[in-house]
Image 1: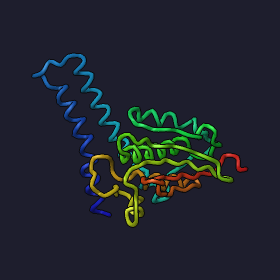
Image 2 (image 1 turned 120 degrees about the vertical axis):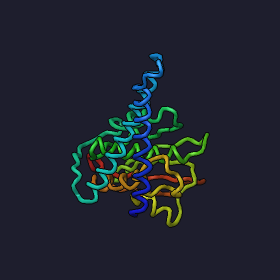
Image 3 (image 1 turned 180 degrees about the vertical axis):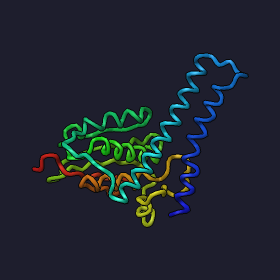
Length: 221
């Protein structure tokens, strides 16, 4: 675990930092006369790199707080329409279909942390879905709980890989060092459990992975 953490942190924190430093260094250079468009592009690159760095640091800090029981949540009745549209807007180029979510009952959750869980699940599904195979998001009531499913048609998870996917600093296959610290699923499961819910993987019929997020309904039936 220590080796995985050091490898992830050394690469994933340095990458956005290096991008931001390179862009700022270019802007400070007196040898190049940038056009307004080029300057805006460099500023946008700097902003994007720093935002990514900030998200990585937030994930690291909150993973540590979860493990020590120090993360404070503010659960309240939360409708899916309050969080899901903003999360979907973060994936403008992704092929995502949404079914039944608008009619699903509200859940008792911390809206900000629920949005983080949804963003991690969507990012993971979009990353592993092949072209032309949309990611599906659906939700339905199950007694006093509400289940939201994020389904992809990627390679899926089997055996030890399924258990390892929820360990911090582990990525699917441990081959991709460019998409984050490998905290997404671990942090998402921890946040779901801290809100009285659960996050479990299922096989997608026909191939792929379905992540099932179960949370308490705001008004139990």
